[in-house]
Length: 290
Image (cartoon, rainbow, N blue to C red; front, top):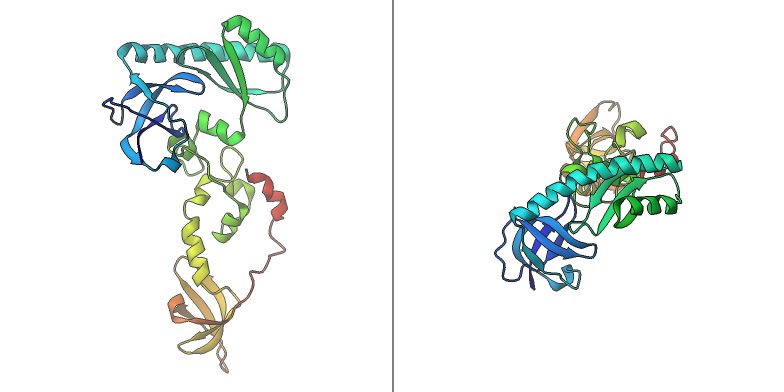
């Protein structure tokens, strides 16, 4: 076990572990740490705690110091510089007629490097752009191409639910989301209904998937032959969340459907999940997956 603190460098960004050493550090404190990119200013989001060695990316770097007022002022000045650098980079991109969209700019705390984040449909030859930016800022320049989900996380926005984007508020890492999840949750496979601001499948499809998988595993499918308290019948309709099924009994003159709790029926002959030929082509929806 190792004693660590969790530090975040961006809002809703990934949490990284650092060795607090003998420093008295608590959640909410600003700290100065050394990273692979250089010296950085971050916020402690996890107080000192013990974690297994296998959860640590070695070598575990130490917290240099708790941030001073001067450090916080320097960080604020960097935020102002980033806005100016954004404008300058936009001008240079236009001058070079590059097919790229600038998303964000980030100064390292020690000002030894400036990172420019952008999106593009394909590869972009930005070598001349880097040279121009290096002349203007007289420091190391790094251009980093990101995906549309990362862009949404950085820029933020409002989702179809009317709330701020999850990725911009609290999701520190993206989880895999698939069309299969939307199907199992009984959602419309209309791309506009299940895709987020980024144009990819909504991250929230992942939130309830584990519960849906548990319910599906113990619920008879439509068309399955089941034994009920009133005899044998065929499942005609399933309410997954309510955990009830409508069954047509195999009795003479029995035309009404009867409703039973899933726990009150036993599957005699199950059926495979049928494919609806009228549904949107699944292959066409694969582009929504990241």
